[in-house]
Length: 387
Ligand SMILES: Cc1cc2nc3c(=O)[nH]c(=O)nc-3n(C[C@H](O)[C@H](O)[C@H](O)COP(=O)(O)OP(=O)(O)OC[C@H]3O[C@@H](n4cnc5c(N)ncnc54)[C@H](O)[C@@H]3O)c2cc1C
Image (tube, rainbow, N blue to C red; front, top):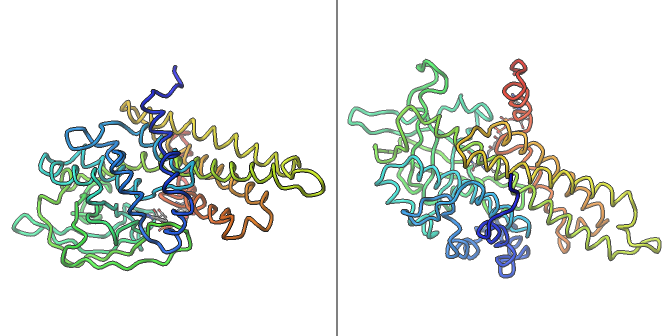
């Protein structure tokens, strides 16, 4: 077993350090506060060839895998400048098109997406179905001439308003008409400017450059060219994208946790109260040490999950367990860091409190930790279904 990164992987992991010299935490926060997409930073990432990490070389990408995607997102998150849109765009949408798209779809979308000229969002969550995705009711109704009319509503769709295309998970056969509940799903590549689409931004309390949207579809006309994979068999493709999404949640958590702890260590070494640097007090030092340990353990397991994925092996157990571990470790890490800063932790100038919602939301999304516990209990350990 070899724990070394290759020179190329090391370069990918370290890339964030150079990027953050130009697009630093202050730049990221300026955009986050007004929910402006950080175009300049995104264009730089595109120009440096990182958007197409998981896209085959023939279509403008670098043909690398989940491990490199993880290293890239973790590396930029270490610097406090995560790009959430990479999860839904570069990973979940572009890599899936690369894997399951027709030749024409790959040629049409991927080179432009790798250059950063077009962006994707990913839409599965619905207001009524919530976590129970089997119950989604957005319907791509087949028409007599082999086309589809898409109607329904999605919610919390990251970057939808600024994206050019959305990968939309819909039913083409309603739940009531299928044999197995996972039958009847179809993935559509939908032009966000198509007739019949309306969007409404959702005012969110998380400081993120990427805005979340409600998206409404009203008889949107789609053709076979919009179908990704096979009609009614989209669930398998969807399933493939869930583990990568969880692994990237870990990248965000580990990186932001390290960023917070790095800032806390610097502050706690400098700040003197009762004649000693506050970092000498075990009440501050031990929670940081514990969180550091848990974050590094999670980061290591994320690499195992990514390795399994890249090697075509099942990684559901690892991806779920590490998403649970990382989100909880990162919350503890940011909380322990915040405590070091005293009142300063809550100021805009120091910007530590702003890190909290960033890791806290990973306990809820892309899938809540309660469902992760359910998965581990049922599928990893063999306990009865609990819900
Ligand atoms: C910042 C952000 C970005 C997002 N981006 C996207 C995106 O780009 N695309 C997209 O499709 N979605 C996106 N989402 C949506 C996200 O995936 C959902 O919010 C999440 O899956 C939870 O669904 P829900 O909000 O409907 O919660 P609900 O399903 O209403 O669940 C509420 C709570 O109930 C509990 N719960 C539910 N079921 C169970 C159970 N069986 N056992 C125990 N407890 C349970 C959990 O604690 C859960 O948090 C985003 C969300 C956020 C916050």
